[in-house]
Image 1 (cartoon, rainbow, N blue to C red):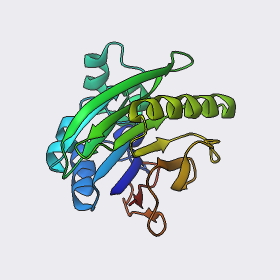
Image 2 (image 1 turned 180 degrees about the vertical axis):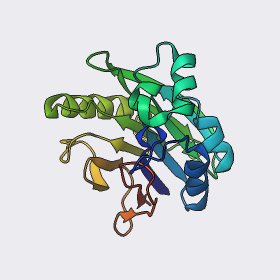
Image 3 (image 1 turned 90 degrees about the horizontal axis):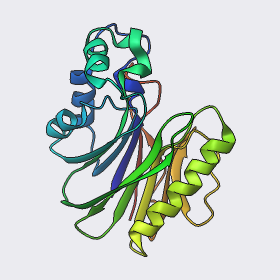
Length: 218
């Protein structure tokens, strides 16, 4: 299983592009060879289009700053670099080559921002969970990571498990899972699976402020 982890930076580029970049993100996602994509900071209206472009199935869960979303979307589609993260946020899981047979969401906190973990069950029984932990506090990021691990392990109930995403800490302390790969604050942890080779950093050009990571598991 090839697992892609990528924080989309609310659909923006570095340096700023000054326009909406859904087409560019969809094109580069389609071009990479992955089975599951765990995406964070996704504009909430993007997941269906990304899944369609990537010939994938998707499930998403809204995170923070989504009150009054139609107005936020109107601004974000015209001036994304002005509204930045206030355009609204979501996590998304995209799956190729297998059907999604279940989807669960667990809220981790309301404040200072709404954070959650969500996961999908694949047709082969494997669970894949996606996390974007609280930023700006090592203590909160570690707490979110620990709570996400507990929720995901409960959903899997002994089945193979992947937990990946933006942990907002370089050293998550998840002793109950095995670290399969990562870079910076982006990581993949597993139970019942093992990494093959090393983490690959994919070329995304100017898109996002996070590098997309590819971890291969067996």
